[in-house]
Length: 426
Image 1 (cartoon, one colour):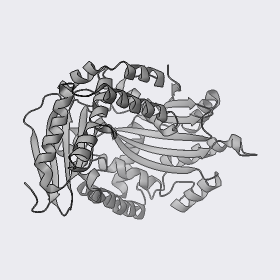
Image 2 (cartoon, one colour):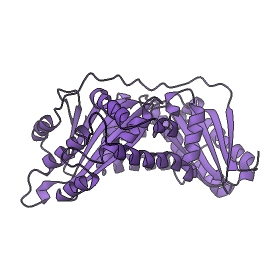
Image 3 (spheres, rainbow, N blue to C red):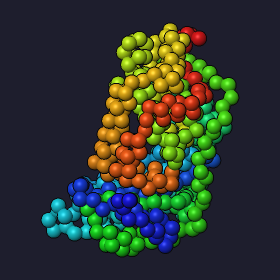
Image 4 (cartoon, rainbow, N blue to C red):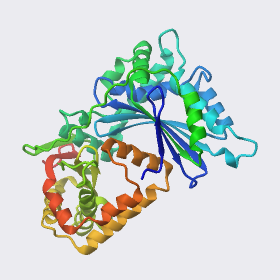
């Protein structure tokens, strides 16, 4: 059974109230959903930082910060993520529950009013955002896009995904492109913003020690602004047919090679087989006891790091490792050997139980973090699930060694990406 109350405001915003006595804070997340596409991903990801520059009641960043400080150090942060082929633009409030503040009884109301003002009442000059605000945030956003290359682990994973999904929306970088950014100005971004606010499906999550009826009334009062007809956000496509493995080699000024292997599994969080796949991935490369860590890093000493992870809404698995550039062939050989072993069921009962224990701890730890609780509900909604932790643990406990070996047949290599030093090994 779900542990939250869900309702829909008259303007189409989905409200999720998560009543819990576990936390002394209240977490609010307003999440806008967009289809992941090159046409407007740059605008969507730039927009939150421009909105944070000032609003009608708080005309600059300093005024917003001063108001939040008055609200006992309430934090307002924004973020852009992608889940499958969906871009999520998130505004987050983190505030103290006013039951711990003598003489304060309306902190949530005041904080929600600031959030609403920032999101719906921007500083304008005619039909345009302030050009200096836009120009300054474009400069910062360009640094964000270009800065990916400074984190070679994240860069190599992103580049592998871009090659692997180059003809699919999933291959689009969540922050957009510098080329698209250059064409944005105050009027064009404001025109896009008006459409974004009216047409983007939106969820409002509020977690804390809350009375659901009073929170619902409060939200209806503050967030009842006019919107329009919602755009449809297309479902993520899961590609199952694979052609020849593509091999990609990129040279940069690096001292350590980055080897990333992209696999299609055809299994997503919406499928019952996701839980065998989750255990498969855990035995293969998610924990210190996993095969990749033990055999590639520890025994063969071929990698500085080696791990695997799932893209749960797209049906992908990635193996990422840092190696000496001369060890490319040997590292690839040993990684492939670990997958062959998994297919043959060549793992121990101890491997299975250690992995099950590690995953169980991850599920339980999620309950101790408000953001993780909200994120799980979001994942559930996208996958058509509605299961609490006890139900997830029951699914996990039911996975057998045969299930893990069976699911390995779905895991097919699609792309091998190697980031190497200039003039390095072929």
